[in-house]
Each structure stands twice: as C-alpha cells, then as structure tokens.
Amino acid sequence: QQQVKQSPQSLIVQKGGISIINCAYENTAFDYFPWYQQFPGKGPALLIAIRPDVSEKKEGRFTISFNKSAKQFSLHIMDSQPGDSATYFCAASKNGDYKLSFGAGTTVTVRA
Amino acid sequence: NAGVTQTPKFQVLKTGQSMTLQCAQDMNHNSMYWYRQDPGMGLRLIYYSASEGTTDKGEVPNGYNVSRLNKREFSLRLESAAPSQTSVYFCASSEGRQVNTEAFFGQGTRLTVV
Image (cartoon, rainbow over all chains, first blue to last red; front, side, top):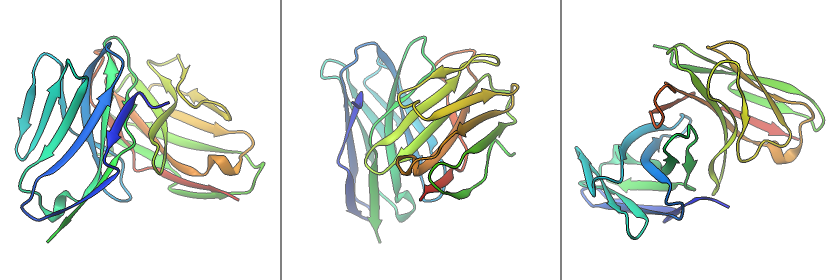
C-alpha cells in the first residue's frame, strides 16, 4: 500500500485563488518531504521540499506546511495562475535511504 | 543541458515480446531509478541503483530486470511483456553521495502492451 496518502485527487480553482493539497504519512522514520510538479507529457520536477525541523517553508507563491505530530504536510499555492495547472506529487524518504515514496498525485486546474 | 534522456518515447508491444528501455544521464550522478506511473497510483519504484555496480528491487520489480551499464546508463528490460505493464515509465537520477537530494526525471516512455 502507498506509504504517503495524498488528497484530493483533483481540484479546480479560479485564477488568483488558493490551491491546497494535503498529504499524510505513517512512517515516523521519514525525514525529507519534497513536492514534485509535472506538466503533461513531461517528467516530474522538484518544486519545493521541507525537513521536519521546520513547520513551514515558502518559495514564491508555494508554501509547504508541516505538522510533525499529526504526520501531515500540505502544499499551498497562493494567487494560483493558469500556468500552475499541472499534477502535483508529494513524496517522502527516510534518512539514509535513496528511495522516494510518492503520493497518488493531485491534478490542479486553474481557470482564467 | 540534456539531463536525463530516455529512449524510446513511445512503444507498442505485443504480449510476450521483450524490450529494453534505455536511460542515460549526463550529470555525473551516482544513483539512478526506474519508476512507473499509472493513473491514481502515483509513481512507484521498480528498481534502483544506489551507485555504479549495484542494483536493488523497489516496490514493483516483478516482470522487470535492470542493468547499470556504467555510471551514466541504467536500462530496464521487460522479458515477456504483459498488458499489466502498460504504463508510463520514468528514469530518474540523483547525486547520491548525500541522501535526500533532488531527483531529476527524464521525459518518460509511454509503453502499451496489447
């Protein structure tokens, strides 16, 4: 079964709105939580990542919020733009491990 | 800047046929990976190679084999293709000397088994 559970499967947001994607994990050994962005016909690319020693990380309009006690983390896309329309994957890995465990993905559609 | 290059981009196979997916990276990365992407399943790791000369199974290795030919190249072989292997396959690489570093993905191979 998937070690990282991601929701929702898809969402539609108006231009300028906020997109929120949530992920939850069970393995407390995970200590690296990246988000990948994938456009149609392309491979995923790293968007932003966080480690559990901080509760929030912001890069431009993208923010990761991390709740270690709840074993949850989320991606917020502020002021969503049509160019943000893509599939977003959360992922997690353990210290000392090379492998990423991915969530199922969320397709975000931003309507102009 | 080529990054991670996969060939072919598209392939149609008949059930029982074999084929090899090729992957090469030019970033001098130590670690390489093969994932498959299916709707609603995210990306699942098939095999990985932490460093040249080593390979290990991931989550879904059955029906596949891999070869780390050298530091640059990591191939995935389907010996006897099955319809369940219809998927989009991604090769990725990462620096690998320090764990938890960015993984760079190729553009994918869309494989259909009929």
